[in-house]
Image (cartoon, rainbow, N blue to C red):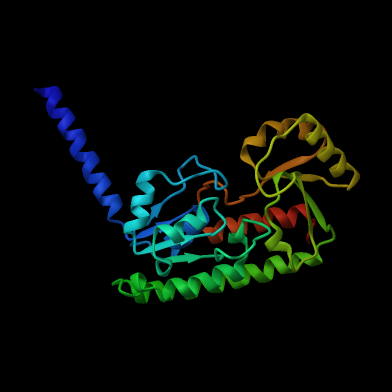
Length: 273
């Protein structure tokens, strides 16, 4: 009897959890956008599609995720996820806010570093029907104003990096930060070609090491966390390794705070005064 009661309890809890999840009106694709909505709309328990240990370029929605998306009133996506175009067939396009549109050809999928696109998407967000009917709508608008002030300040601070004496940096990972430096004339030299994770060989590491030394670098940035295993090797060769948040994975802190932390690392790497 006790075993049967436990099974019934587990099934009831599972059913309750599933019903609560399916009833959520706000769905967010990945950590950068999730963090932004947590700053703007903390009262709403938005459903995050990217799993805790999932990676932006490879995480795929589960059957349960797809059901949550169908029932949601608002779906906030980057638009460069491998599955993004499916969303426009799965639910009404009026429900979807994206940093990019399905017909766009995007050279770099890390659009959360394009602050202008974020600002544009947040205008759509604050005018979205599901947000406007929130009892916290006035608070959301005030928070958005503060967020935009912080974002504009960050935009100016990143643009000011063009005055740094060093004009390139090396990253242990794939290409990520193009949008942050499009107005600063700073070049990113990644370990992995392209914008997605790829196979890393000792030859790749050796090539990056030689490029960094020839370029007079004193710092190599760690973009892909799984490549931390090469940190000791680079440090043995006299290079300092500093982590930057790519947005591909979770890290504690708000979006603005993490962008400020990245800014400090870049200023140090580029030897800014």
